[in-house]
Length: 287
Image (cartoon, rainbow, N blue to C red):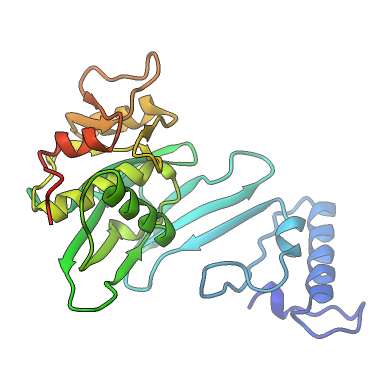
């Protein structure tokens, strides 16, 4: 079943306790290293997606890997959280087929499959998962609310970061989301933790609020500060090359470093929130 249900007679404790998990894991790890054999420990997870029980187990093993995905999705994401022998936060995407789980060679094309054209509230974010560039669509909807406290629903992103972006849009951009329910979704079931998604989320929200779609062949990325300025992000060239490979022609992003440009992707430098609002053709009086 899982490591939390294993029991060792070496100590008198119930299965799942800190001492039992530590002893059972240590015996298995000792056996694996003495026999030069690979060992995979399966653990229960909580509703938040974290390993259940004591965190001592994560410190004992060499690699911690999470298998993510909703029941309704045909795709599963394998994400390395800890790795003593290589880079962490690497990601693999797998699809359930007749022969079992098969690796998806181009996750960006998969996440962007079936994208509708000229739909307000959609922005393509060029992100980095570990060392791999991934393009994913961020969908936003700002709809009039009949509730005294409008709803804020998020799937695939940090809810606190959405609140921050909304506050910056109102305070620095002059856009009002009061009296509107805001829904944000990362298409494909991927969860984004990178701050560089701020600008793409802001662009999707502005697009939904103004009912003006973002050009289909445009990617957006950049970190948004509380002052409304757009901070630079790492690995610009990797993001732009991935976008070029998938046929994108332009990018709204912060100023890149030397040598981090693409000849086939026109980069529109976004210095602050006002520049983003202007390039999207929106006025600050939208309500």
